Image 1 (tube, one colour):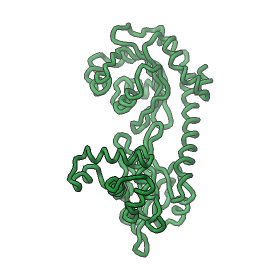
Image 2 (cartoon, rainbow, N blue to C red):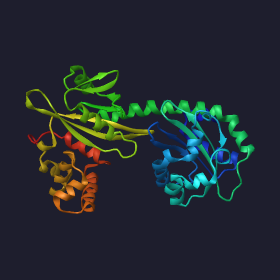
Image 3 (spheres, helix red, strand yellow):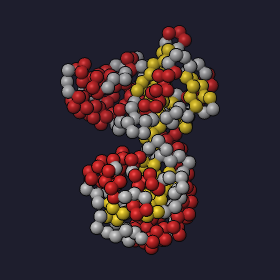
Image 4 (cartoon, rainbow, N blue to C red):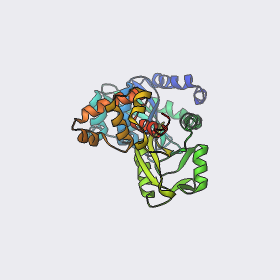
Length: 354
């Protein structure tokens, strides 16, 4: 069953329930934590809702129990973590207790778990009992230690298959649909995927090049591009920005740098546009997407790098009003995030012909 779960989604999703029954546990979760803090829940027994799992993700790098299992001398082995390493007082004083467990009324008290090393970050299995239950003891610990090597191998196989599938899907869905030069990087500018147009730009070497697989921008504004990439791929608060780079002949190329969230972390999506948002007519946004005049102007302000607070101040309205309008804009354009909206605007053709 364990090795079947490596490639069979149904078997993998059933695995937490089998572990819960074997250990007489309240809940089980299998999740992934990236090296920079990104979190993804891969399978669980349903004790937490999707919103609660998302909240946990915001606190995952403050999880004292997870930290206890991820120490180098404890990796790849199951432990009675709240019996051997984390005291009740340490748990009560931890940020995750106040921000997550207490916030959702969760009474997790006993945790049997393991962290398994991965190429970037680690996979983890957490097995839980509540405040009124007994500790797990040697019985459940022995059961899990008997299969820990099999679980480790299964998770490594599955993570590689998922990464390959995800990388291919992202390249096809995000890059393959764009005729303009587009690429994805990690927070340090290491290129993870690029389309043919971006590859051609890199070979020209006038705007950017690749040095050991890492982006190297030409000119005095390279530092600004590096900062934009770090902001977009920030694991906690990713932010979309635009950068205008001068070119020979006085023209400029505008680059939209947007967050792209994937399992285990956040990437930066760079889209190189020959035209900037100043050349996009408000009327075009109104005709093509049904935006009101005010919404069209806000969308263009965002594409120019404006913030909600800045737009609200310039228009003498509340930030809540602007956020409501931004939400409406996203709905009308079919975008889920501001970064996607910025990329959409920068890839619209210029005013001529619209």
